[in-house]
Image (tube, rainbow, N blue to C red; front, side, top):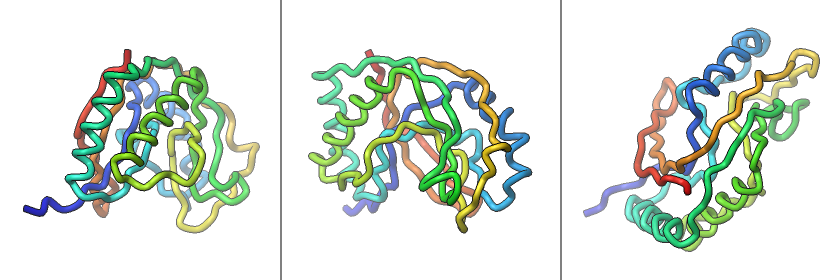
Length: 187
């Protein structure tokens, strides 16, 4: 039986206090940049690994492999904080607007490398770009430029990332809908 493909990603969730801090700051930013398509605040997260669309059997293999690797490696909880605003490829030519994530980024980088290696060994294509911890806020169809004077700072927000999530993403006209495939607790 062919189960089809699943579009998925591995992420860290943001607690409501952090989502609220982001939302409060974006209230003043959104009207300045109507050309950006803003991420629904309920969908804000930190992507550790985007898997893309893969056969369901491959995602199950990846899920089982992560469980085994986490039992052996026991990745740790980490304290994270919101950082400065940034953009890919740059603030002068925005395709993706994001907030940098700071804090225990060494632990986060280790977690990302474990997940990336496990994904590759499970048959999921490797990410070609270096891991850059961030929370995506908006995307642009056409490159946008944000004047640095309009950015300001985000409110201080700190949280403990204590779980990793494998999420399914279904693209809909109003935006993606996410649902949980699997959750792993960090040590």
